[in-house]
Length: 172
Image (cartoon, rainbow, N blue to C red; front, side, top):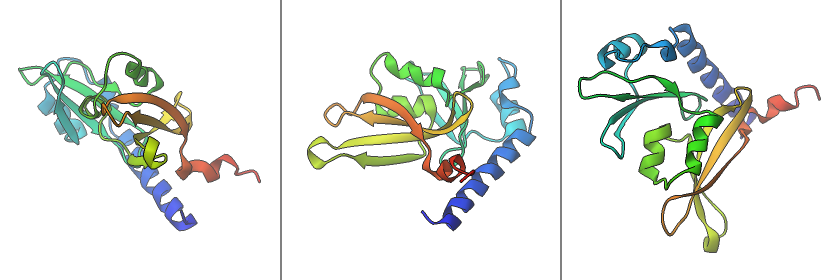
């Protein structure tokens, strides 16, 4: 990646972050608020799905370049339960329990920043990567691997986000 492209990506991510933090914090929205009110104040969710138990879920995400996403479930009256941050170490630990399909993953965390194949053809895996602030501090990607036979989550791990790698060594 060229330095110019790197700087443009950083600028875009910072611009989106600043614009969202300039608004009232979406996580302070009271549970039971009408989705229409939340949308009027914070903008429309950029992803919506139906969970495995039939509940509508809405997600405001900054992917592919931002590091944050927030989600809420909507009841039959059009009210949300609670807006919660989705791209956190604690929330990613949900992947330790149960079987996760691509639809399940997308409905819990929103669309990923990147989808890419990794490995040799005989052991190729599809990996979804989410940009996030690991432990609220480090510019990271959470990589989620899918088993090619079952198309379910096989494993996940975090790693440094390459678009921020030059910042790690600013003192050289």
